[in-house]
Length: 240
Image (cartoon, rainbow, N blue to C red; front, top):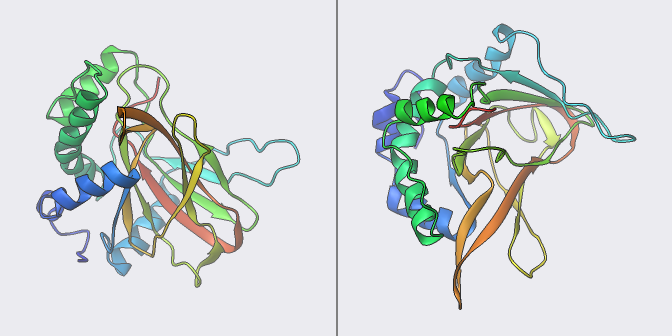
């Protein structure tokens, strides 16, 4: 299903098949939401880069290509991201609390995003992490996860605002998971223009013969070979 930015974000997100999304997150650590933005809305969102100010450039490792640019939103997220984050949180907090239960983690996430952000601030987390990112030819986003400090939310949302094959080549969204005593498993998450995905921020539970264990997750964007790739990372917790 596709809908314009002008559609009520809560109604659109509330109408998703949350049972299927929850099951896929349990199984794979990610769930793709095709066409969450239609083409016009995705293009408009990509142009927000022009008004977000100077980008942050993560330093490349010695001998490595550039890591692109990050355009942080600041304290007030523009449409549709602010409304999306509030609407997504209501459903994802249920999944996050269930994950904590099976992993025997005592922390509980509030039902309301505002209450969760207040707990972040009380814990010294005050800096917004949500951002647009832009990768040009020979640039990439290295494997990373945002789990430093207390009150980290275990899920986040990413979306693609450029068209693979037309605007850029390469630049696949990649995740890895590390299970106890096993080799890392790489996964390519297929995203088209306007697609979004819910992903595990840093870890998720996985059920095995001996019960539940913690699977560690990281995500990245592979090297762009041609053109320009613009995406978004929507994070629920703040940074220290």
